[in-house]
Length: 172
Image (cartoon, rainbow, N blue to C red; front, side, top):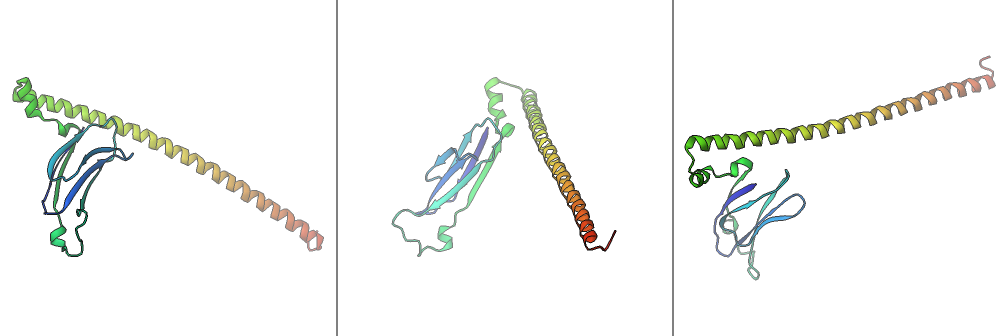
């Protein structure tokens, strides 16, 4: 789960568009005339997300008479993912948990997230190791092929020069 809090300064006549996309180009959150708010979405896999704030002038408004101070907006954004997104205060009130139980719940979720991260890192390490071994094999076969080519060329040169010098009677 990924959550975000955003706050954008208001300038009259300028509209800010917020768009959140994943690496495949799927739109996860979209808001016209964004000023202040929250967004949240859930994904099944690790991914990189693109958060884009775009400020546009309304149609028909001239751009050349606006200075930088009239077009500059300040954007504040706080993004949380994974265990950080869970609200333990609300959980404690809903389940009538004691502070120690809430802390244990938070630690349990944190340890589950750490185990998940380690599993992901192990998978990535295996993929990288396989890629490394494959590359090493390709380099090994290419170097053996290159050595064979060089050796055959050297033998051919020796035989050719030997025949040439015998034909010219420089050697017997």
